[in-house]
Image 1 (cartoon, rainbow, N blue to C red):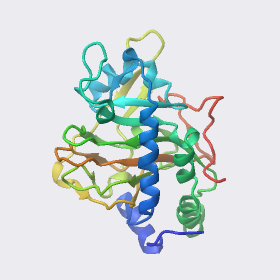
Image 2 (image 1 turned 180 degrees about the horizontal axis):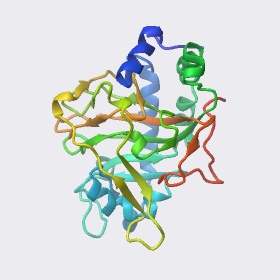
Image 3 (image 1 turned 90 degrees about the horizontal axis):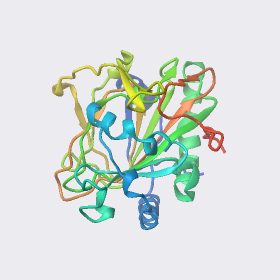
Length: 304
């Protein structure tokens, strides 16, 4: 079994609990990253999205409600592989204004279940034993990571010149559990992520204050499929720290840590594969979350 070149240790684990995120350089090999990039090109080549289903992806609340919030295509994507596009790449009829492969913002949300390459990466021994077994061994009852399940996955492109900003947010706003603290994000850099091409920024320690906003399914008969309850806090830009990472690096992201990324104004893309895992033991997944397990795809166990 091949474990990360930079092994997890007690110091790294302490850092994760202090900051709410942890950077592990060279966690995946160049070959593994290239296999994911090559596979996504095959997925794009077979992409078929009817014009009326083409949705521009945004993290701004008003735009989310206008685009994803009114679209069954988004709401029912939890157990499918679906395509979401950058702002300004579609005309009024949903036709592409630029090459389709340059227009995609992200592909989600079940690559981990239906694509063999991404399924293998998600369930790799590095993830199962290099992360979760270590965390369980070190923390035992404190985290109790005994029944981790995969709730979603995404391939993010951050296209050169147009890759949209991701506004400050907490993942638990969209993936809410009771109690909180049961969701962990895995963010894999498939290319070097720099300040120029839109690396992640975090507020260290911001995972300890709960959440103030949730995106929930709207009641039947309303104009949108989802709505926001509560409001996002206003964050001081000076509190954010950039977290550049090299190709193959992994960032572990606590479900409540505040993070963002800037618009990619460079000529280089910033591809990443990300997935979220929930500890299912003694945890309640909110029935109000936009993403729900289905009979076709119950949340699969991380352990194989």
